[in-house]
Length: 126
Image 1 (cartoon, one colour):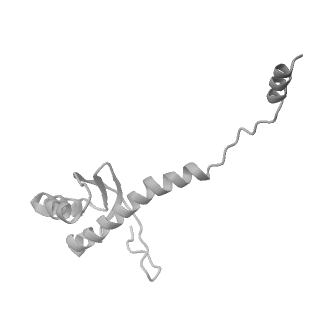
Image 2 (cartoon, rainbow, N blue to C red):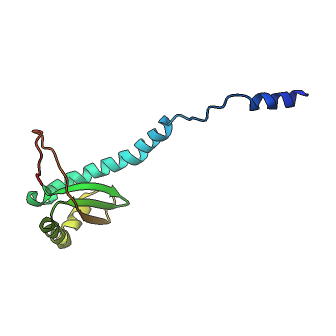
Image 3 (cartoon, rainbow, N blue to C red):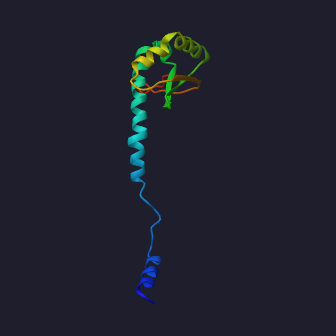
């Protein structure tokens, strides 16, 4: 056997660890994708609290922001109707003008959620 064949056999018999560390891909995901969404959702949350009337805002929860669509969960049908009316009456334009990013649509979905106050008690009881 010549040296090239021996080197090939030696390389084939070496232990190859198939596991790769996940720290780098997860770090990239956190830095570029999730951090950006969390920042945008935080900005939208502040605007939402300023613009939406308190009586309606306490019955809503911002669920997500993806592809310029803000998804808002509303806990009851009457509050959802009131919010739809406000959004159609110009509230959407107000939020879009205050938000520095692109906001194309606000999607309302029904749902129940439990929020904890600063005092540690549930905000809503269903």
